Length: 250
Image (cartoon, rainbow, N blue to C red; front, side):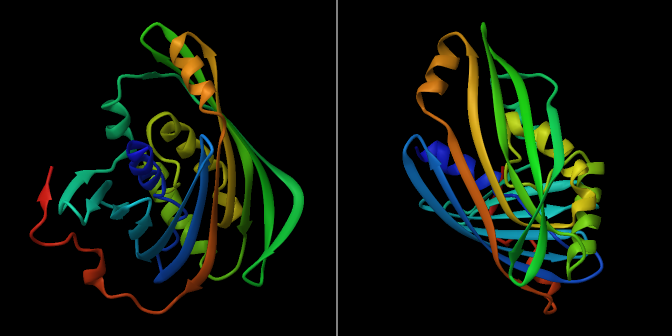
């Protein structure tokens, strides 16, 4: 489960606003995987096209630094004082899995939801990613709902950094690792007009043939909910986005 916890933390590279104004968001993440409930908190701060997310939970204390202009993403483990490449494509390339093209669907569901006093519009999302693990064929299917604020404070800044990240082949989504990486970038593009996501609800399942598919299916579906609990536009110091000194870059 430790490996799953680390993966979930990397997935949390998510809902990133900013560009022309400073923006900070406090979020909670609730996940249930294989019957085990996991909770984490995250503070995301953005200035121009740089983002830092500090994530605590699942016995982890990490920070993710994202720079859209430089096309770089780094994960900092404060316990081990190590810095590793958090670019989703690089991480996926290190996995013993061959990924196919992701199929993504994003459609307005015609509903609204009030979050933090903002009226958010609902979007039904669906993503399927085929992959091969040796001789086994598996498809990861993710469905859910995204509730986004289309025009409130931070919405335009969110669109700017999301577009910059997608153009750089990167995702600002908290599900931005392994089989989800390509699909989340496409979903990010499809949601650009939606605004700033304040609640994201997903259900993930695995289907296919072979031993790998059977093992993944036995784990049961995984559910994740990311909720923004506070938003601030107070100025943020530039040094917040500098990688910590004295850490080892791997």
